[in-house]
Structures are given as C-alpha cells and as structure tokens.
Image 1: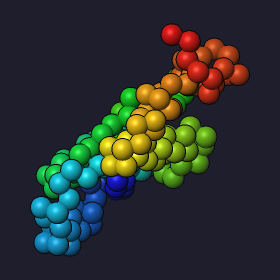
Image 2 (image 1 turned 180 degrees about the vertical axis):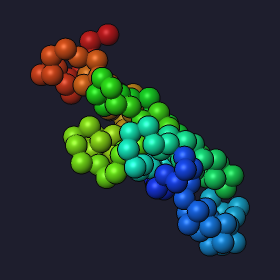
Image 3 (image 1 turned 120 degrees about the horizontal axis):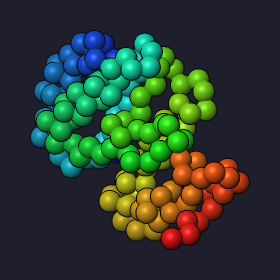
Length: 149
C-alpha cells in the first residue's frame, strides 16, 4: 500500500508533486502499479484551507495510474473525520490531528493485510470498526470496547 501526501497549494496538489508524477513516476511506472492500494493526506495553511480538495486532486492522479484509492468513514472524534484523506492545518500538533493521521495509516495497513496478505481476521469490520469509537460515546471509558449491536 502507498500513502501519498501533498502540501495544499491553492486548493490543489503542489506543482512540485505534480511535476514528480509527470516526469519521474510516469515514465518508469506507468502500467506497473495497477491494483495497488493507496490513500492520501495533505497539510494546509489553516482550517478550511483546501486540503480536502488537494486530497481529491491527488486521488485523481493516483487513479489515473491504476491505484485503488480508498477513503475512511470513521470519525476519530465527534468533529474529526477523514473521508477524503487525513487533512491537517500546518503539522499535526494536537491529539485530534494525530488521531486522523494514525487512523489513515492503520486503515491502509488493515486493507493491505486483508486484500494482499489474505488475513481475513484483520478486515476493519473485525478490528477497528468493531469497537466503540470516540465519535459516538458519551462516556469515554467505553472507547475500545466491543460494540453492543
């Protein structure tokens, strides 16, 4: 699996990142990465600075090479999610930003374990998504316990 990050520039992929994909990656890897799992992340100058747009733009680049892109539906807190990828203002300083980044990496490892290594017991529905998350509890002592459906 591959996690690709780009700084947000004017709501999109940085020109240096785009140039790298055009000039370095494409000539050497075109048609060689079909079916590889990937996810994206981006930093931005401040909240609402366009990082989700940059993640979508980076996903489009990856899809053109044949990568299989995924988003994450989890809320790591009641207000923090990463549907398009991990997006943070500046570098991840606070616990919420760190949780978003960690969850993206964890989900990438779960999908690779499940789809590439055939480790069925590591499917997210049997691991991270099978426990109570911070997003949907009133009592934080319940976090990490099995869900009661």
